[in-house]
Image (cartoon, rainbow, N blue to C red; front, side):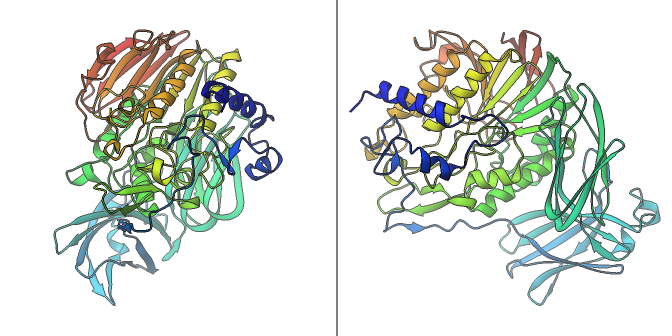
Amino acid sequence: MLPRAILLAILAAFLAAECHAAEGDDQPVSWEDYLKDKPPPSKDGRIVDPVPVAAGSAWKPVSVPKDSTETGVAAFSIPVSDVAISGRKVELSADVPPDFGGTAHFGVVPLGDPSAEPVLFVKVQGARIEGKLVFALDLGLIDNVNRDFAAFRRNGGGVVAYRIAFASAAGGEYWVDGRFACRDGKRVPAIVDGPWVDMVAQNSAVVWFATDAPCQSEAVLGDRTVTRPETSTVHEFKLGGLQPGTTYKYSVAPQGGFQSGPFRFRTPDRNEINFEFAYMAGSESEAGAGERCYRGVNREILRRLALAASERGADFMVFGGGYSAMSGTPADFRTGLRAWKLAVEGLGAQVPIYEVAGGSMARKEYRVPGRKEALFFDQPGDRSTSAVFAEEFRNPDKRFPYPETDGAPQYRGSAWYFDYGNARVIAVDTGYWTCSMPEKHGGNLAGYLMTRQVIWMQEVLNDALQSREVDHVFVVGYSPAFPNGGKAFESMWHNGGKTAWGTAKGEDRKYASARRDEFWKALSANPKVVCALFGGEGNYSRMLVDAETGPEFARPVWHVNSGAAGGFLHTRSDWVPWASRVACFECRHHYCLVKVRGMKVFIEAYGHAGDLMDRARLR
């Protein structure tokens, strides 16, 4: 068998030459055609990962032990099953268990308000009717002349917002927020997700939103109107022909519904070298109630930090994963992502937010005889974490890695990159195709970057190195490469394989730290890489990874963890091998602001009260 280093070099050269032979916005060929024409190195029809797992076996799809029992994680997304409107009367009904009651609060959405916060002022108690919980509303209470600040009466209707507090006899409570629209006593399509502005470049931008019913739609950009004749619930507008360094005003509307806007966004200057972006991660709620535990999201802290970063001038934001504590079924996972989006929705209509995959996931859980911990793994196909994540967000997809093997999830939406000014931001997916015991049951280990993704990252790094427009490279991900507080047994390092989860069962996970080293050597070898930002630990830490950290890391690169945007906090692990290299450590909710000033780069970390926690020059 060829030595591991030679095998890696051969595979890297092969994939670099074949995977991305053509330039453009899309993949050069489909995955199926690629496998048909040029099958990659394989063993028994499966791709061989250069780092051996389970005594050299290939990575494989998940196989569930025959004697295991599915735990059946319950979905916590209680839907409002119907909204019926007849004249001035509205009825909302929900399918909930018999022991559930509830109270609904109704109000209006001030259209065009960047805060996107509804104003609720009508209280309605739920009643049991034919097995459903029904909330009856008289619209006359909404367009009361003393409270008609949203011009509901003048427009013959508008967008009605509601929050329902469901409560069970056992004492549990669950909130559902939503909205619908009505005009002249009839229901019309309403925007229920967005609008969002994404991928803002010098000459283009993407604006998109979702509606509660299929319809046509339009977007108005200045004096220009763009229509979408297709009938759909997802409406995406790719706006071209924009001018650099220009502020644009836009609004959107579903056909027959109400316009939302105006909102504003700004394109970067042609030679933008002075800008800043915000980075934060980890908004999962662990305990508490109210806005601190809204469908698994600490909505209060997340919203406060995001607005503060915008007020300090962030041109765009990167959220590094850890969205919601609601991991489980795809419905749970999607509910958690949408709860996260509600917290930043109005801001995301004007400031691009780029989302990093990692943290919560769509998974199945099983109990295996003789094993204390549950076996969990990613769902297949369109129920996978990657698929749901790509549906809920819009991230750059100019080029992305091929799936690691036949049947593995797509990377589209979870491994991405984009350029802004004189910088490039590259996102890696550290939670791809995760299984808690991949050595025995297939799938992938959380924090482990599989071969195709690593090679893709190297291609994008090399492209940045050759580009005259790119001076700085920032790599972002979820699981930290050098954990410093609470995640040393997981992350990319897995404690060097010495004491990882499952070690009592004889699992050797040194391959994880070996791949971490390969990943970091690629960053260290590129002189344009400034730092890597992660969000997998609930704290702030900044450290310089250099030859003193490891002799193979000759060129210094900063490692920053910023994973406390409302989630559970992790104190410092002062026993890790690189503990002495940590320049700053804070265990508080916060966000980071990365400032690019020509060839110089600075970082600032601010606590949720607005106080400065750390300031340093990175380059």
